[in-house]
Image 1 (spheres, rainbow, N blue to C red):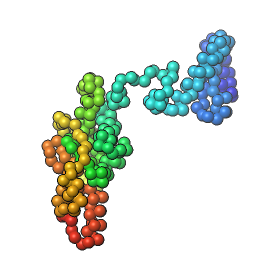
Image 2 (cartoon, rainbow, N blue to C red; image 1 turned 180 degrees about the vertical axis):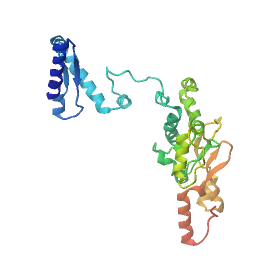
Image 3 (cartoon, one colour; image 1 turned 135 degrees about the horizontal axis):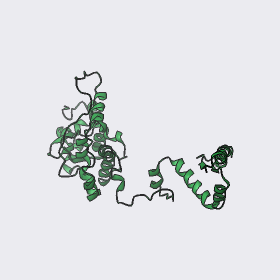
Image 4 (cartoon, helix red, strand yellow; image 1 turned 45 degrees about the vertical axis):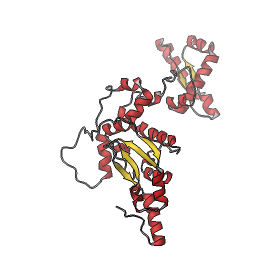
Length: 300
């Protein structure tokens, strides 16, 4: 109670000398008993003290709520666990409300949505994929292992693989990657957000590229706002499907054409990644070739 006592003495002084009514709350968000004893309300006038004493039950509930909120340090996390508090506004009941910008730049929201979207696509193809940015780097190996192929990858957006960097994508590329997914899940709410955020500054994306290619000389006049690659929004949403039986048979028979089996096909029907782009496939292939000295296919 030492904390509250110290503040109470100060509040009493200001009330007696200047007639100012001061009240406040001290909270120590810890599970320790000492923390609970240190928490409480303080006041400097008898009138305010009387008001506090007459609402002890309400104040205790209020302090418990406030202490719990401070423990979380994240109001969204509080709502996500289904907790509701009288001190907090009710969580959004809008369907898929977490996909909205919610005051953040569209590019930040799109970067957050991209892993969620691709994980959902894999789930629809009967394969669970963790929502992790690192998964982009090994995605070709996963496609190879699970005998899957990504169709209608947005043309102009770098495909997944060892060199993929979500942070290096321009605002336009991020938009092309997730726009149709957002339209599908948000409908009119997504349309309402368009045009509200005109931040097409790709300085962060360009910085990620520079970091990835250290040692290259910088051109003069490249400071300030940057605008990265501009990509058209596709008319079809990407999806993931299993290989046709013919491709499965090609691998099983170790045909020389198996290296060309598509793993990623863009919206222009161009194969942008094939089996030979999978590091795991190459490793398995080299191991097989070493065992029987019979080359299965030519590696690019």
